[in-house]
Length: 289
Image 1 (cartoon, rainbow, N blue to C red):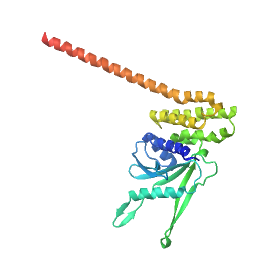
Image 2: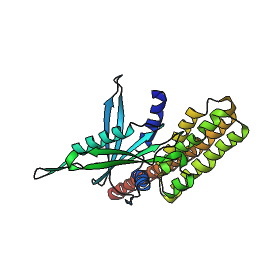
Image 3: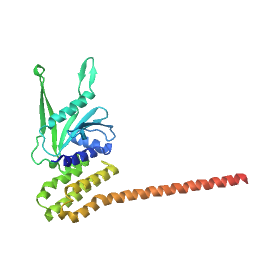
Image 4: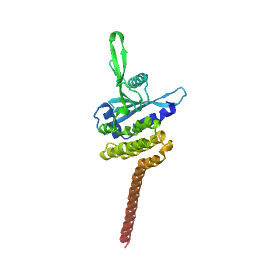
């Protein structure tokens, strides 16, 4: 996959990890089967590297919860058998920066890793294993579990509150529509957008799993990914218009409503200020008389 194309997904993945603390904590709980409360503290450990063309890019995403436990998330679009070495390197670098020293005894605490394959056309292993052989001191298996997003149902995303991954559901029909843009497949895409994506975002907003701002950004990211994947097909002209309305109109209505509410509050504040000024003048006149 061309590098610029990959960066679209990489940037989107990192963008969703900067949504509200509640949404990100829900994702961590769903991925690692933890039970952190929604108001937990999140610390981002971003690092950069320069590629051969001297372009800086975010290299890894390590999130620390409550200053105690760290989690390393890596998103992939295709199979990469060397990824376990990269994950190990990132984990080691993070552990080295935060090592513990007690009476000449050092501890390197690695973050819990997980690789999320967003679009894997072939089977992926449940985990990658790197055996660390320390000779006479023994050996240790470093395991990096994976998740195949293509096999995760919308129901499971909602159940585990991992809703911030929902924009990537658009990838589930990518191969199908590349092969055949039939009326039936266009209906499948429309159903995916309306029933799976938009409905899930709205429901999670309603129950408090995400914030209003999260919902707006998830719809926006979905729209951007849709435009990247499908909007250029001639057969999509009618669906493009419907998708624009579905993903953007509701948000515009909500934002307009908020603007109206703010304007009304400002108008009421202005009225009260004018009333205070009027009363002050009455009191001054009363004192003079």
